[in-house]
Image (tube, rainbow, N blue to C red; front, side, top):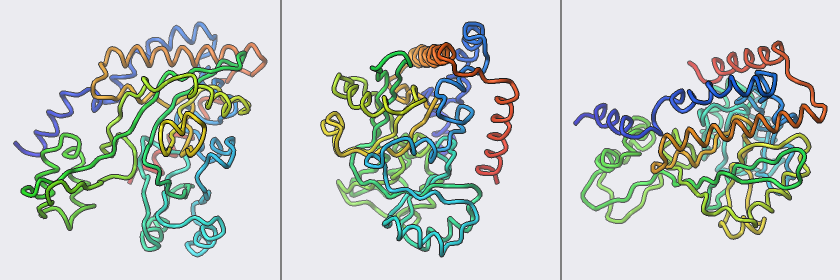
Length: 347
């Protein structure tokens, strides 16, 4: 069977690879009711009054600036057009060493996120930089996890309805098969075959020794082959208290997903040895639904609940005196984001 056919049937058999509109059709329908209930079609712009964006157009740098530095990786805000020499000076000043992570300040489904291992790679990426970006130290903690937290404005305690564990794309040698054959035999790796052939061209026809594990992708994104695992069984009062303590001081933030690296679950629940890579506001999905064992109908129910929650938080904010967004404001933000996407992610 050809690569195309194998990829086609893998995607066909698992809804996690289907077009995103399939997941969001029920949300669009529910939005009509939520618009009537909140008396504003753009209520989601006030779910987090402190975040200035249109669903997915949050500035990562501005959002993470709300968090105390002790929970953040060392970060440099890189403006488009900054010279390579100046970048090196700023990295030295902030003590950010290689390897490091380069990503757009306003992201889009993990595109253009890179692990940079050398000055040569960094210079090449900066030369072709299209938009403002972030350079972050690479956090080597073994656990990457997504924690979704929300809190109603009139309460001091919040809820964690979603926890996602990330299993990075790896291959294990059998002493007989080439790297290419191992990729073609792995349902997640085969969908990344074109990219892996480029990034691992020196290994493509090499037989991988028995039991040798190859770590193929350091970026924990679904589009890079990372497997998302439902970690909701880990939710307990200790985890809630960590995020209550973290989020309560964040004026104007009530709803979003924290992407985190931690040494272990037990230490995360103690509030120690973890770093927040980024925060995704109202556009942040409860990514545990992408667990291969999660049914599409359950994913629909989950997303509908999340958007009802976002609407209820916005309503409470309206009642507390937060202004309702206008059509002009929403249109301006949406237009700016569409223009940004065309600039940042299209050739």
